[in-house]
Image (cartoon, rainbow, N blue to C red):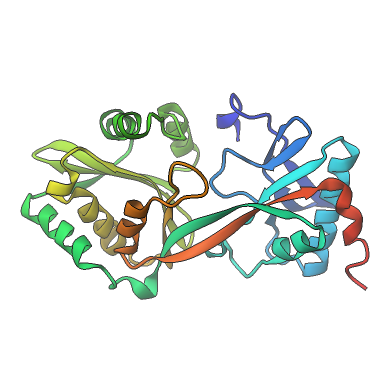
Length: 290
């Protein structure tokens, strides 16, 4: 997480059983509160594949006692969406209930399953046809500069007075560290970039981290053309395609237009919770396994 070191006070934890690493918790600290790392889209407790339920309880107990001993009063932790799990892992939700945790946020993710990759709406298919008609071309590129500087940043500044979560320097560093997991696809019309998408990919999931088009995106159909190209031609074998959240201007609203666009590709809803736990409640885990 060193690429975020100027923004967050890292306080990531490693849990060992003897000399063997059993779990990781990417995290950052603010005052007396520990956050499941705020610089990560998905955080949470990362477990060794073969961990048993009782071991997970013990790991979490050790984390909470360590935090309490070191003056951290609260742990705010993210639940990992199930599509990213290699096997079912609902221990956090169960423990959160035992620990009298509160849900402070519930994320809504639009996810396309491989079984539903033909459920495209008429609007999305018409957009794709406009792209074909205009002779749009999709190219995978090794750097992000063209997309960041010509499409993504101008759009975010103009429409939301915001900047990308990752600076150009940060996304370039991530690409260097994880060359097989981070990919950039740009759309060109008459040799000029008109849209682009940045993808984070894992074993079974392609995650749409950024997608944006120029002012002619509706006329050209550039975003529909690009998204369907990614689904059908680049990632046909992925089990899931995660199109991300559709938050509005605050955490309690949904951007209706954005959600409508995503659902036009056949996505369904996956939720993940964010819990806040008082570390002093670690004692509530002591007699769970009898």
